[in-house]
Amino acid sequence: MIRRHADENDPLMRLLIAEPDGGVRRILQRACGRSVRTIECADFQTARTELATLRPDALVTNLRLHDYNGLHLVLLARASNRRARCIVHTSRPDAYLIREAQEIGAFFERTERLAHAISGYLLADLPVRDRRDPQRIDRRTAFRGGRRAIDQAVHV
Image 1 (cartoon, helix red, strand yellow):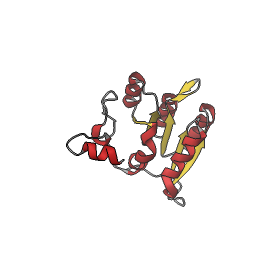
Image 2 (cartoon, rainbow, N blue to C red; image 1 turned 120 degrees about the vertical axis):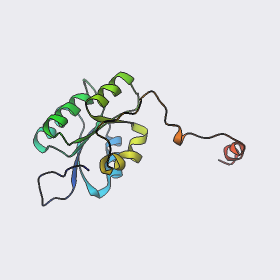
Image 3 (cartoon, rainbow, N blue to C red; image 1 turned 120 degrees about the horizontal axis):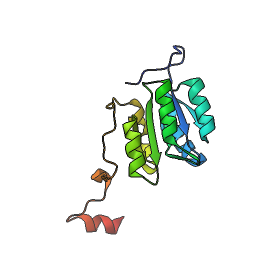
């Protein structure tokens, strides 16, 4: 499990969200609910300052932050708090950058799925390293064909 921050009076986990899109930030904040204290940043410089002063328990960052990328923030988060859980997301996957994120200790998720998966990333007991292949498509959520597929497709 993730170690809570040093303030014993505040039982909430601190999550830093570094995302340039305000709509995605609001969706992620709502998905976290009231069990997580979220700190939101729209750019790299603000997120870097927040990482240095707050030392959050978790970081969710977009892989692309205009002139910078989220890997810089992951490295800073891991340097300030080795137990910080880091999640990198993007809507345009780049296999090389995803593998880099996994090698430095971050988990990867597509932006479209992150709101549904964020509680699992923050609260579940996960392995130390994300070993999933970024090129492999998760077929568990894909539409399955078969004998009754035409019935489902027509009635949807």
